[in-house]
Image (cartoon, rainbow, N blue to C red; front, side):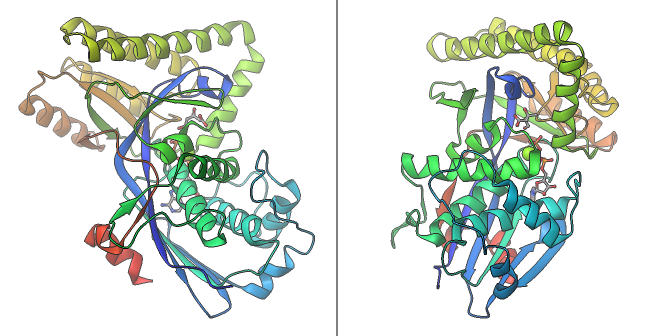
Amino acid sequence: MQVTDLYVSAPGKAILHGEHAVVHGKVALAVSLNLRTYLRLKADTFGKVCINLPNIDTFLSWDLSQLKQLVTYFHGKRDEVQCLDAELVRRLREFIGVSNGSLDTCSMATLSFLYLYLSLFGSGELPSLTLTVWSELPTGAGLGSSAAYSVCLAAALLCASGAIPPPLKEWEHTARWCQEELELINSWAFQGEMIIHGNPSGVDNAVGTWGGMLRFLAGKIIPLSRVPLLRILLTNTKVPRSTKVLVAGVKDKINKFPSIMVPVLDSVDAISCTCEKVLSEMTCEPITGEHYNILEELIDINQHHLNVMGVGHPALDRLCQVTLAKGLHSKLTGAGGGGCGITLLRPETDSLMVQSTVQELKDCGFDCWETSIGGPGVQQHSAISVKEEILEILNYY
Ligand SMILES: Nc1ncnc2c1ncn2[C@@H]1O[C@H](COP(=O)(O)OP(=O)(O)OP(=O)(O)O)[C@@H](O)[C@H]1O
Ligand SMILES: C[C@@](O)(CCO)CC(=O)[O-]
Ligand SMILES: [Mg+2]
């Protein structure tokens, strides 16, 4: 089977409010970032499947004959994807030699690729292909790198399998899929997330698929079209952590102290709803200092709640202290335990103040940058629409 070459990309995300609570059926507000993961899929004729993941130093290849042995029992279902095929996951773990509890970056990325590849092609002829992924996002830092990776894999492999068409016309530079196709991409990306995260809510892959700002509640995705332009500072504490471990830790705490933790989750839910209301008011009436005061207070309260859930870290406390000394308010974003935080900048915060805050955070050993939000969801690219330095990496392998 011969597949068509293609380039796709998907954005990372920042969660404004609702991380962790969203896993337990509460509202989350999330927004895409203008930092993306790019994937190149190239058809080959060597009878091999190769993956190049330079961000995580992973370069692997398998003979099609090896992979075929894994699918002897398998009848792929491309349009019915509610839960993982436990037997396929077990075989793949055995095949790549990874135990159930492993958090190894390379194993998780490999497992999710092989799972999607075999699920989508396993019922027919396996195609020979090379897949290269490069991301502008820090890996495992709370900005949805796993979801952007899974969304790119799902879009590229669904296209290659013929389940969805490549949307790009000859004369276009970028193109997106229709709603129904996006839903299919999102549901397969969720499978990839399940392998990496264990128990994902689905909010991260939804942002990677649709982009923009959205409200997510129990699998229901509502795009928020009327939102004010927010200025956000992103800080990566560079403390490594695993979303899977942190999500499992919060679940344990809820099971151990339900009467203490459930009200905390309810309070986070109320924070997300209040934030959504304020953001919507800011688009239909003149923006005042009071709107920003409320947004800042919500950030502070939520950061305390996340500490109560056990997903804080001294480096995140440091971020909050440094920014508060400048009158700015921060919270962790994503799974916490280290990784990234967001700081809300007010419209009147001048660039000198931003620069000195960034410098102080860098002096703590953190990476820090002002970011723009609301990038488009998953899309196909022509080669010339991919930034030159990224194209060079994707085409190197
Ligand atoms: N560029 C990439 N190339 C290959 N694998 C990646 C890449 N980015 C992420 N991954 C996979 O995703 C895993 C990190 O996922 P994890 O969910 O822990 O962090 P995150 O998605 O960055 O943060 P969060 O889920 O809190 O937003 C890595 O261990 C790796 O398996
Ligand atoms: C921590 C979490 O809520 C967000 C991770 O970005 C996990 C999830 O929703 O799957
Ligand atoms: Mg993740």
